[in-house]
Image (tube, rainbow over all chains, first blue to last red; front, side, top):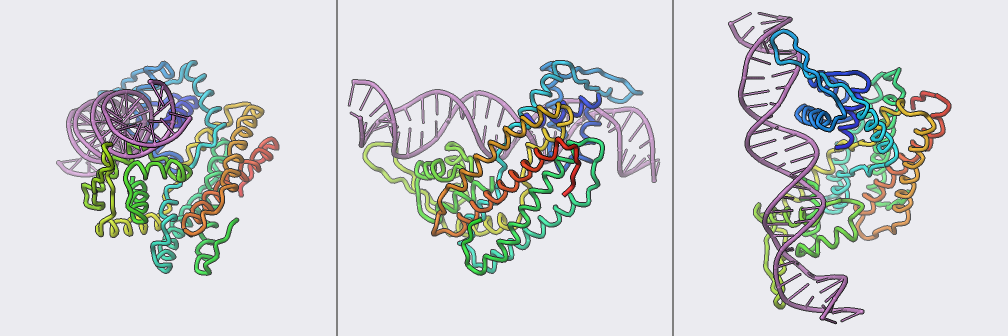
Length: 176
Length: 176
DNA sequence: TTTTCCATGTAACTCGTTACATGATTTC
DNA sequence: GAAATCATGTAACGAGTTACATGGAAAA
């Protein structure tokens, strides 16, 4: 929730935009970072307006539904800084939904477990190479850093899986 | 959602239990793995019953509200296997909510960024040592593996943060 | 001229959480 | 006799998603 607010405020801080524009940008460039949907963006934008963090201006072009151009207010800037700090400070616990399956892997024959995990590994590898191929964003340090962070964790995950798939048949129960 | 179902089915596969019991176990032993709340557990259990994956038996003890003892059915066992496989196969994208703050770190003075990140590092370290101190569960391989997985990712995250805090002041924009 | 793109939104729904309600039983 | 624990649940709410509705403009 807060992240969505932060993201929108951050985008508006860089530049005043209307909803459609924002949503396009998110879908095209930020799909790796967030999964916020159109309807949600519109709703949050609306709330941001009600809370005084952004101002709204209707800008008519031709006869089509007027664009609502959102601009960050000074209250919004303050809020933004608050949110960045909070977000930087806390290591929000990552959700490891995939680990619940792991917990029960004793229930499946080893060969089947290995096949499942190999599938998972394949998916992970593809995701890794997707990030590896993405060119550095360049002039915004933070964005590169964020992508680098994701990549780092993805690789760690991949490495762990590779190691696990290798050692599982040997019946080790390695710590480390 | 599916993970919650999987978790409950898995627990019932190991042993028939009533709601209160299940919830206690989750709160006491599984708080690292899931954040499912009591009300949710009761609701999912209920739905599992309606769907025929578990059978319910009211077991009266004295005059208190009767325990509803849930047992997995054969349909439930099949469902369980389905869910484990699915869960093992897919590397569900981890949510990197903390990265949105990272993206905007250019907006804050470096010194402040570093302080925030150090705070975050501290939190991470504590979480790591929490997992390090937890004794191996022992006789269920999968549980140990899952904990090991979390620990591995947590360490990777910590290492990345340490490295970042170190190199950020030097103005590098390292890839790797 | 039909499809795609621009641009807005709303209504219904799902999932999950919080907080409360109930009442018996055990423990202090 | 008060407090904690056992054992169930519901009601209200919040966040987010899906799917739909609307209609003009540009492109094919």
